[in-house]
Length: 334
Ligand SMILES: NC(=O)C1=CN([C@@H]2O[C@H](COP(=O)(O)OP(=O)(O)OC[C@H]3O[C@@H](n4cnc5c(N)ncnc54)[C@H](O)[C@@H]3O)[C@@H](O)[C@H]2O)C=CC1
Ligand SMILES: O=C1[C@@H](O)[C@H](O)[C@@H](O)[C@H](O)[C@H]1O
Image (cartoon, rainbow, N blue to C red; front, side):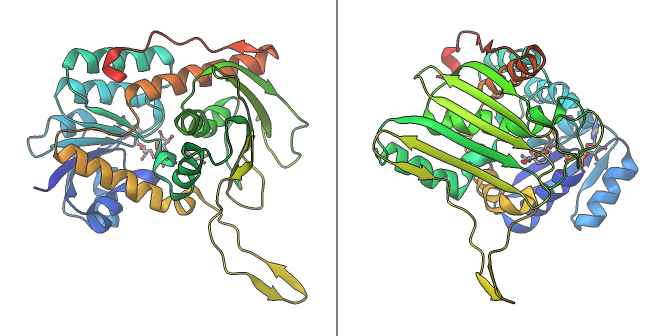
């Protein structure tokens, strides 16, 4: 059975996913697409080179008879509306982060999914499917460093034109999710420290930022968020444990000795650093969805990430340690 997919939002990552679903993975094909207008959707279909129908709205895609499952890759503020509509239509939905731009919006999705009685929602936290993070988790789970005590993360983009708090939220939401998954823990507080702002940053963006999270098991996690580091796209995670230290493996690159220099290449974009993670994430989602199952990050994980984002934004402005208080986790997500 080939899963027929409707995609809402045919921009940068929407086209990446259209390509991977139709040209790379097995068991799925995009048959319907929408954007802000028919022309944009049709242009993306033509550019990617697939057989699909352009629809005027995301709701038309969701309700199209030929669509079995939905992928939401539109702008974050539109996600809640489309995810709720997909649940209403009884269709499995993969939503790129964020699930919703507010914790309340995520809870509305949680409540709707529980009321539907079906596990329909998966959130696009692709780092859980990344080879490097999976190796780090395997080492941790077999006690390779003893009890983890401290985690030191860095999330560096070469350039990213955000303003205000958007960068903190849009970028670090990945650490907020992957560190919970890696450590099997939850957060209790957030603190945000602002170093000197880089002179290479424009507008009101505070960049870089340093986030400090404390967890229920007593761990301390630091996250350096640097959206304009200039040199490349660089994701780091060092775990300090009772009996050892483990580092997130780095992508291989050919060592080059030339002109009295010894150098390695650095990846410059998220779509290249996580290309395999996106492929594994979507192949596993397609395979599970075809069997009526869901194994990836849930709407609850999307909610926890949103609560953590809110606490970090509050901590940045208050310059205080802010609590991270979650609603009671429903049995549906245990
Ligand atoms: N998992 C990851 O590493 C990444 C996730 N993302 C997420 O994917 C989403 C899209 O990001 P990008 O592709 O970078 O943005 P983009 O701006 O390139 O594409 C978004 C598209 O959505 C369309 N759109 C806006 N409102 C719409 C509506 N009501 N109905 C249908 N289409 C609509 C826009 O016209 C645009 O074509 C964001 O939520 C972003 O956070 C983006 C990049 C990487
Ligand atoms: O989700 C992503 C982008 O939207 C975001 O802007 C980048 O900072 C992240 O590294 C990437 O994974």
